[in-house]
Length: 259
Ligand SMILES: Nc1ncnc2c1ncn2[C@@H]1O[C@H](COP(=O)(O)OP(=O)(O)OP(=O)(O)O)[C@@H](O)[C@H]1O
Ligand SMILES: [Mg+2]
Image (cartoon, rainbow, N blue to C red; front, side, top):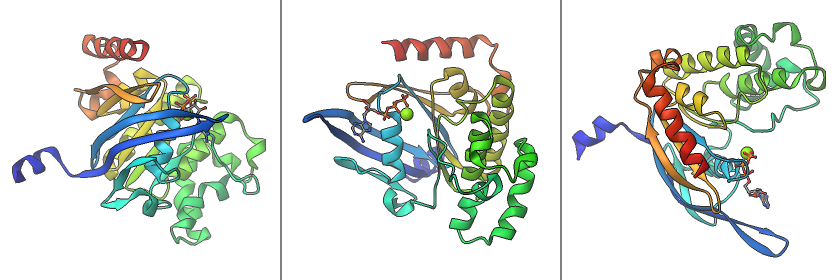
């Protein structure tokens, strides 16, 4: 129905009947059961779930880096494999290139998308300032802390403003204050650019602050056991953590993870 279509928005990511098994010591282990979800343009979705339940595997499949045994992922009307390099993916391991310094790692996504390095420097420099990295432009990845590496990886993922961003525990190595600053920064960025974001996190509060929808995954095999639409206004989200409704959703989600 046309009205329905406009009311609900345009589906930009369609995850259809995804199943995945791995062979471990001659045993076939079913890691992803049967995952189906449609994500609308401009929405922020978080997946939360216990360690080892299959979150990174699912994100790799969405990114087109790993093939499912059955099912498919369509992004912007194309199979996800055709979107490699066009969507932003911040891996759980930061993946910084050891032979490139901080600023040259930061411009990688821009360079892959055809921007000359000198022009790319001008684009990332204001971001480096916001991320507290300006003084470390020339540092090599092994010379900076885990939290700083994570900030470089996030900066690299968002710098070329991709339409779709996948984030695998993007704030895990950060201290509480830096984490809060970058969460707020990300919230503003994706609203401004109307980006679609899928984020994996262990932190339910973080998921509720940032997301329009939170999906709880559970293991053996990985499937969506609960999903909730977050009822707070985006601009107000970061201020809601002390209200009753927030606390209720937080306990509902932690209950679903433990079940
Ligand atoms: N290439 C692989 N070969 C065999 N088994 C794998 C492979 N990749 C992942 N697995 C297994 O699949 C399961 C899910 O792994 P995955 O990394 O997706 O979990 P996760 O939910 O991201 O965990 P964490 O929260 O600790 O990051 C684990 O049991 C893991 O050992
Ligand atoms: Mg993982």
